Image (cartoon, rainbow, N blue to C red; front, top):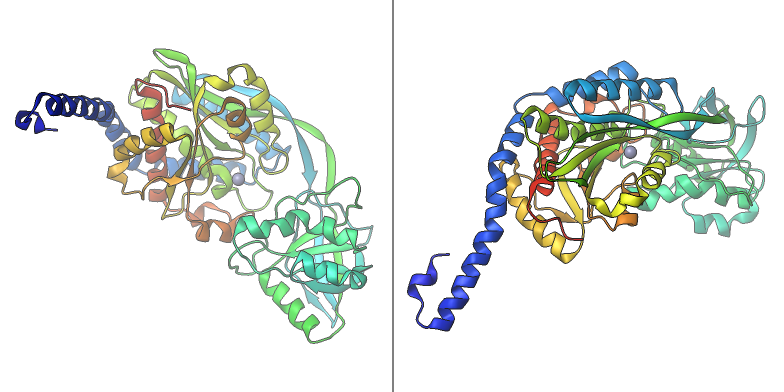
Length: 459
Ligand SMILES: [Zn+2]
């Protein structure tokens, strides 16, 4: 602000001076951070290191379902590799997780004969009786239609053929379809795969059972196969299906969250938390969900270490376990750090992929949003859209709630992410190296800024 020379009166001059000092002090904190965040952005986007690390994770360990040997190995590798990166206080924090094992699965239309269906058991589904089951089909397009046709559901396999209307709206049929169908006496449930389009891909994900309603077998069916079943049923034809699901629940298994840090140089007790979840579903290789979220948040901390940056506050990366089917890692983290929940000044989770066009989303008070509005200018070299309202994650949820912590998410383009979400197609082939690097750069810059700025980010 250069207006003080033109002040016409003392009062106006004083006001202008205050404004000038305010503007300078509020600008200066980001301007002081800029050389370091520019270096972080440059280092993150200089090569495809992060993409190659994701390839190493997903090629070596593949799918990483909770309680599986693959996840256990990936946890050990992550801790060893974090140590090799020079991260501090690297540790695994044990937590017991559920173990569900997918057995043999098949489904077919037996009348009109005979057509195999592309299905995938929902995570945690109970098995069909030995040898499978056979029943007539009932197709409905909503919970309301099921209730209105309750008499037709008894003894049938119910298909929820629900058009995709966004993940949050449609996923209720995957989580709640089995319960609703069982309440009307159905013997099994199929759910049209939850995704915008498909190449006959099948999308798994958790199914919820409740003690008061019988648990019935539940599977996703590819969109094309759901269409076919719906066309047959609409034509008035009796359709008979055969379904075999041999999934089973085993005893809980010890797993762990992986934790690494750079200890803060002035305020080591104040924690800036970033992370993703290392577990995945048992199909594909969990590249977008959520190997990439682990790699880019870890990369943000690795780059600070590599560039010799030790911010005022502690930066902590956590690779959570069991996000997909239990949230035990998130719960254990919040319990372990309950006493220091309010020392968490900021929490960022990446669990929505990195597909362009991506954006950062933020949830916090007006004061925190104002501060984030200034930090945003540090991201200019990346050409990201403005930070959007609303951002968090399942794994940071419990600690953020306990400590009233402002939260952020890196949000990849949902129209690409949900095409492959929880499918055999969630592999690294879908992700471009520059998308991974850009995400790591954005997270590194924001995280460093929040950890280094003089004032704590307001609640
Ligand atoms: Zn996820």
